[in-house]
Image (cartoon, rainbow, N blue to C red; front, side, top):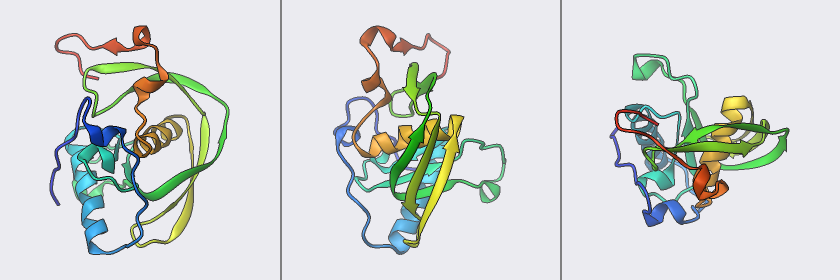
Amino acid sequence: MAIRIIRKGEDQALRQKAKPVTQFGPAIHKLLDDMAETMYHADGIGLAANQIGILKRLVVIDVAPNEDSFAKRAWIELVNPEIIAREGEQHEREACLSLPGLSGIVERAAYVKVRAQDRNGEFFEIEGRDLLARCLQHEIDHLDGILFIDYLRPDQIERATVGERS
């Protein structure tokens, strides 16, 4: 596994739509492992392949990364994810590994159901509420070239002060 460089700011990869994964195998497995290691190294809870400059529809998520050992962590891998149901709404603060120092209150669905494939191409569905629902929506937006700040007016985007981490 390797830690990849997270693209930041106005990097073009963040604004491009990712392409579906059509071939599964060792290369995709390694990429998903690298994404998870990169996410944990950056203290994130989610990472889309666009964020490391790879335009493939891949996401890793762990909204409860509390294990010290990488081997014991249980992240979610989503290949070609799509939201197939959403309900309710929530308004919570979001930040992004690709937009350090920025945050804002974003409206999202409170519940989502996502259909995706696993690292071997098998289809599955996952349901998420609250933080998991928010993270699923945020990361799937990345795959479509959408950043959380796109939902906000300029005066709604907060900038961290020196020493504060978003």
